[in-house]
Amino acid sequence: MAFLKLLARNRLALAGLIVIGMVVVLALITPLLPLADPDVTDTPNRFKPPFSEGAILGTDHLGRDLLSRLMWGTRLSLAMGLAAAIIAATIGSAIGIIAGYYGGRTDNIIMRGVDMLMAFPYILLALAIVAALGPGLMNALIAVAAVNVPFFARNIRGITVGIAHKEFVDAARLAGMRDREIIVAEVLPNVLPVIVIAMSTTVGWMILETAGLSFLGLGSQPPQADLGSMLGEARSALITNPHTSIVPGAMILIIVMAINLLGDGVRDALDPRLKSGALSRPMPATTVDRQGAVPAAKTESLLDIAGLRTEFRVRDRLYKAVSGVDLHVEKGECLGIIGESGSGKSVTALSVMGLVASPPGVITGGAVHFDGKEIIGAPYEVLRSLRGRRVAYIFQDPLATLHPLYKVGDQLIEAIQSHDSVSSADARSRAIGLLKSVRIPNAESRIESYPYEMSGGMRQRVGIAMALANNPDVIIADEPTTALDVTVQAQILSVLSDLRRERGLAIIFITHDFGVVGQLCDRVAVMYAGQIVEEGPTAAVLRNPQHPYTSRLIDCVPTLGGGQRKLSAIPGLPPVVDNLPVGCAFAERCDKAHADCRAGPVELVKTEEARKTRCLFPEVVSERSA
Ligand code: ADP
Ligand code: MG
Image: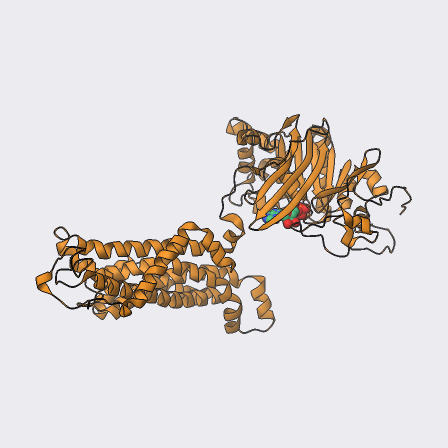
């Protein structure tokens, strides 16, 4: 099972699992072991030291066998802790789910009650409950469970509130499901991992708390042993006969440590966000593990990418996201990279500045020359000085790139000051200038806005302004208009196009829309399954696409006033890059595919002046007309 595998990879959690597993097994088989009776007193033999005849851990103040008491006491403490955790989790989660799901007044009444319980220090509350119910094992259990209910209720309510407003719950409601069914079928499965996580991280606490009550004489009653009462009884002999305290103390330490380590491991393995590799903190720059020689730059351009290979190593799979990409962009030029989603455009772009998350990303080959210098595998300081200052990025979703809690002006100022030590006043006036240059009206007052106060188009302009903050030479725009509607898209494209002319910016524009490429780009490179399949001047490629994939992509663009042309979609799906065919990756979906296409790798060859195509049967003749 994936969960167990993940857990086993966490060494500490595994150690915790093994230790707690052994303790549990010992506790389970205690009645079968040939142990002395834990409750039989033998006062002549009191305080025997460990390793004495007949008592391997010694005896306590009444001459009872410590080993036997330890085993029986551990059994009792574990059972108490677990029972308390299960009771608290069940009641607390039920309260939390009901409060979170129904909301409004129900929520208010329940949660104020929970708050009242939470207002007391919980040990005091537990003491008060036991005092009211009277000392005893059962009552200690109830007290510990009760003081932990609010913890679960609060946690689970928070999660449930988030889920209760999700679309799938609305959908279930629209489908006519009753509240009870929705809670069981839709909400519970989503909060269950959280309940398990909360339990696994609190069992240790509950064992400590029950032991604490027993220590004070409010839990297990003599002669019955649990770890807390053993410690309590040993207190008076702490100095003279420390072994009587050390034995149960060490056991508590071992149990609680093991459970907490295991609990952390369970949490990490169950949390879906951590499962995707977020647990491993990404490095500041992509790992470089280049096999073979570093290729020389193929051109003298400002930015030259040669033979770039980037892979993702995810457990036993290898995703070849980018396999041997050559690209270059001149000063002031706009290069379009186009391809379906998953073709490796973003990974190519991120690899340039070492921004692919590692792990799992690894750059395994190729070179990137910026301004003549090779930067793949350059020290982090070099990359950092280039990022933002020489090469800047614009991403697809400005709402996700802008910090929601800071004013856009402050974010711009921060971007400026991270590379330039200018005074805040200067940075501020530069920020206003930037907003003006991306044609944001009322820049002086807009600088005080929060991202959520702006429309999508305005936010993306701020995104562009951020990219411009340090006067970069190259801007890499990764689908910057995909989240915007067409009219706003046109405005953003015209802003970018003006900026390019005014500042001599080089732009790498990533998109999946040939219409956008046609408006903005001088040259275009078509990507498929991590490779460039066609490259050339935009006008020429649009007029005469040579690779079948390119023509299919162009056919996907609707034209206004183009008559009743049938829009065509490309049949099939792009291949998954962990299992690429040996031959042409597009052959599966290509109506011209031939046995030769599948036989072996197809090279990217020059077909015309400034044009290259990776196809055995390119359509070179310009016969295509609208
Ligand atoms: P796009 O062309 O849509 O920008 P990407 O460059 O984001 O595509 O992704 C290219 C391929 O890289 C995807 O098909 C995916 O299989 C793989 N990939 C991207 N990120 C990861 C990751 N974190 N782990 C594994 N594979 C990934
Ligand atoms: Mg992408």
